[in-house]
Length: 302
Image (cartoon, rainbow, N blue to C red):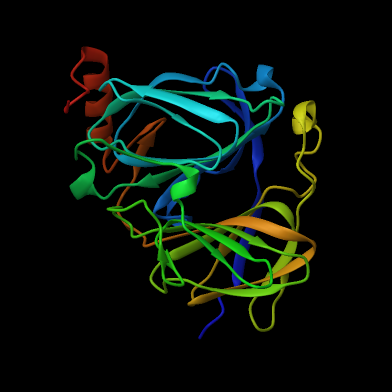
């Protein structure tokens, strides 16, 4: 067994997307080879509806998959193919945009106005970029949960962990996406695919990720509320951890416990031509996509 060392850490940065949604960008629009097959991740967390309620009106996607995971509140979605639905607390949507889709996502808070969720973009290999769009909407109650006697809780969204397999299937990069909560003071070892890139996004608590000799501590502040979004962005919270090679990740929870998303996926290792919500392999393909968007031939299925 080989512990994966921490090779880099970074903090999510404030951003505004859609029609004025205040969020934090975890990664994206940098060097995609560092997180391959994942392209981008946003953390949208707020309790002021003015900062998220206008949502993400109609926009296109092609060549990628988008993964939306809701912790608090809900997200209503609709698309150009007639699909509609609402993602409640704990729910996941894995949307394969494939050849192209137009959709919108409109967040709403819980009874206290709180909204918290994540969106992760995963690349598609060239052979699947023009596949038919597909949705997988998963209720929170359908996500398997693995619990240990020490209080550790692991929600298995996709991939397999200790005999439990997530309900999202048929994904190109064979990813694993886990929501991991480790109680205060506990140490856990999590197995990972040796052929996959591995990332952890810490969004609550504190802890240490380490190999045998080089510990890296992660301190995460208490969840912010409302207008504090623009005050505490440099404080060390919302931390992305990128790991080197190996087949295990070790985490030691701090005094508050720790909660993080663990993402692994086998790299696609193909050229990336990317502009906004469309990701292809070449600039020629990218330009063709935008021509089709302008002339009304973007939608290929349905």
